[in-house]
Image 1 (cartoon, one colour):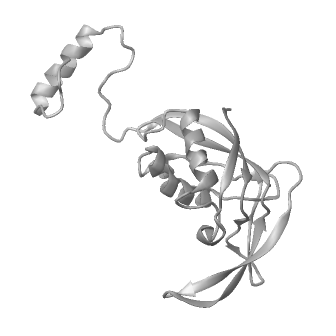
Image 2: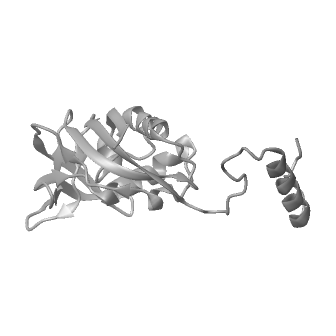
Image 3: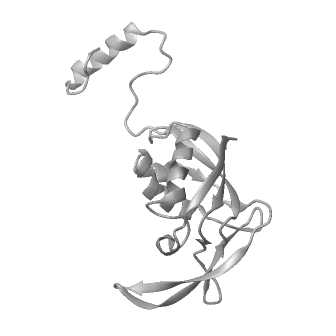
Amino acid sequence: MINIVGMRGPEAKNAVNSIEEMFPEATKSIREPKGKVGDYLDVEITFETVDPILGGTPSNGDMLKLRVDYATNKPSITPAQFKGWVRQNGRRVGWNANARSWIGYAPAVPVGDYELIEVEAPVTSQGRGVGKQKYEAFAPGTVLKTVWAIPLRGQGIEGVEDVERLFETGAVNPVRGLGANPYYYGGRVKLLEAKTK
């Protein structure tokens, strides 16, 4: 096989053309422009909270609340919270560092009965404790569902199996947990099912 790595532009182009001529039955070009993102797949994800998942939306009181999803009128985990979670944990499973920005996230809403709890966590400023913050949170054991549109080209994501691998990192020792203040409460979640929609 021809080694294209290290070849100059015209040599590499000729080598690629030669390879594509040798395998005319190939349906996909071996050349993809850098950074080209596409071939989106909708994946329906059902997961369960292991730790409390905290809301981060300011309210009229002194508590940070879960944001209400307007389509279902239920409390939800927001796309912004997913984006931070994917940014940190996606690296563990080989996703491109920018994959978080190319995924379309629907809010995650509870399935069936659910319990909201109130928790407190310390607030620090410049490394010192300055008080406590109250949060509204999903209780451990809450089942939630979301749909993600994931690109199968350009971000190191190959399919549903890669989404399953990502969630496996979130069940035991995530680099970042899900929800507001994830480092204090853990923010761990456990995948129940991921399937194409």
